[in-house]
Length: 228
Figure (spheres, rainbow, N blue to C red):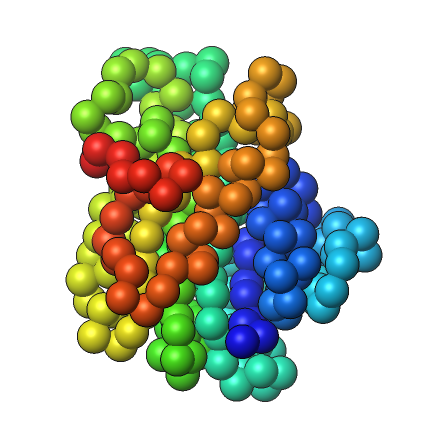
């Protein structure tokens, strides 16, 4: 099946590689970025059918415009990959955090994913195999959480909570919702020393490709469950 896949924050890093892998598999990929020119440059370097669109997940108007355009162009959406994220704030700690940074992280990493999911949910319900994959991080696992990177960690923990709620509410519609940690990946956000981007992206694509009777409401890396 030629799926219609929306990938947010896809002009570089994990999002770009996810878009590449999906397009190479024959899917139609809507590659988005806050800056349309960056999205267009990224899309131009990929195989297959890749369409560049502007999307700022922190801007409700931008989200609504894209959702309308997706509906007009395709009439459905099969896959949403919520990848857009900001503020890996290694420079601060919860006991002295700049709450403006925390608020910005929540607005993109949590509420951004939530905004997009709500906007495209009518289109996902029209798919026979709807999937939402929230790109999370083990940094958001309460089981192993310590100090540091408060904005990022709290936003990812909250994204995990959203994943479980949406999964419970949408299973009856046939929409599977999972959170995926791609691992420590060598990207602009992750920094040098991580594993190849292709491996981290494959962890995300695994959740995209789940069968209809696959898990929903889980937290995974490389297909293996992670503790919440």
